[in-house]
Image (tube, rainbow over all chains, first blue to last red; front, side, top):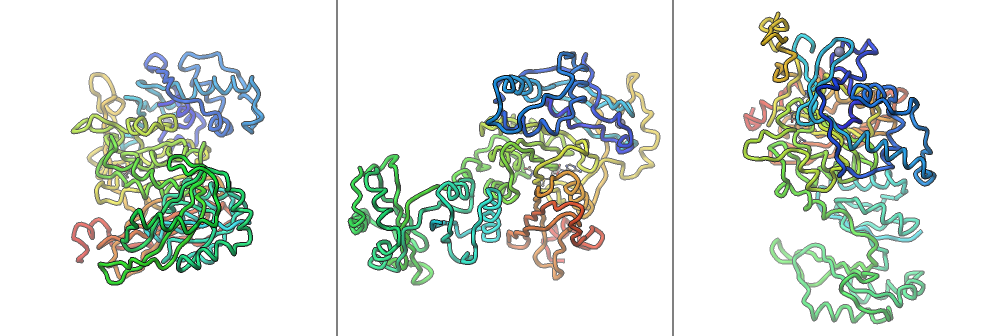
Length: 135
Length: 438
Ligand SMILES: C[S@@+](CC[C@H](N)C(=O)[O-])C[C@H]1O[C@@H](n2cnc3c(N)ncnc32)[C@H](O)[C@@H]1O
Ligand SMILES: [Zn+2]
């Protein structure tokens, strides 16, 4: 599961939707295995496109869960047009690429900070299913 | 404005016009389809320039190619006359004068094969074009194409006399060859639910899957639509309630979904697949999703299930079961129980989800099966925020399926609604297994 996807996933329990603790999930850094895939190509256009949709505080939170506290506290502000990007902005995009798309969690677990339910990631695939009493 | 000749396939006619319109709209190209004819593979359109012609056709599956239109005739003498009577003939001829070139032959209808001497003889009739450039069979600068049409004399034999000839300069071939690239026969990871390549690519075009955007398949299975979406450079995300579908069972095949993306060299466009019940969706609700494309379960090859217990009494108190000091339902190997759900409710959920997640103008496209012999009209699910843009039917012997395509128009649209309870009374699955004899 790509780091980017942690920015998409909330708790599946519907009752947790009224809480703002259901997103992002809390990742157990001691149990998460991270892998870097250099084969994923740099796609500046896509990154620019989704930067807008990214919840930056959630990125910071999950990165911290996983032991990275070096990210800037504010979401980078970049030109929205590819052609206007300067060198510095491209460097930022590359860093984002490494973090969001090249980094993935292959094994691990995550927990809802509202209801406490635990979800597992196995073979890079997160499992968001619920037992009947939570469904 | 310049005239261009579109050469389409004479197949999947219920999808052909929808694909063409959707691609034109995607690239903001205005085309006039007044002379579009279901029964003809040809269409002459006016476009601003070559660039537009290329855009219009380069990702099309149901077009073969687009040509700069030079002329038409019912026989060769009238063709030659017509070409030379076109207002910009001289200018056209001169701008191609020194380019390397070759002639290509295409034919539509019948099965007459032109022999080499016949072809040479035909090419020689075009001497008045006065091309001075080198004839290059490999990578010429320009390809001039002669498209002949033939009709059948009787069901077996076609006439060996053409009854119509188009002549044009090739501008762009379509993406039709990708059909073979994505052919299921050659796909590393597939299953009984995999969707054929041609219609999955066409679905992406009608759904306007765009480069650099997010496409989501909630019922991803073996990922047929995900690979098609990635082919068009979207970033694809899939979910399925059945982990075995996305992981691969390991039985008989070592492969899994990611292998397909590696095989097609689109791994960079694969975001993730997740084990998830669509109706207990974990994608945060304020995440915009550009396109939703899927083939929902309809109870034929796979049942429609959602999370929850079929008979809740049996599961009462189970949340307290402890194994090795751990709550059973929190263990890594826990497999939750599921209960049946109706297709109508699932489709209602899908439309509602689309109306909440798609941007205005974004498209939802999904496949829906229907039995042909039902004497009642098929009722199409509708949502008040979604415009039903296309309803393209593919007929089989005893059943059919249709691609339904909706555009999100937002809260103010207030279109007609149509909820599950009002729809089909008969269960498609039962009908399918009794072979529609009722
Ligand atoms: C018709 S198949 C789609 C197959 C897919 N297009 C492919 O390429 O293999 C429907 C899929 O929906 C899944 N499904 C059924 N109920 C579901 C639910 N509630 N949520 C998510 N997926 C579900 C099934 O496991 C099945 O893989
Ligand atoms: Zn929760």
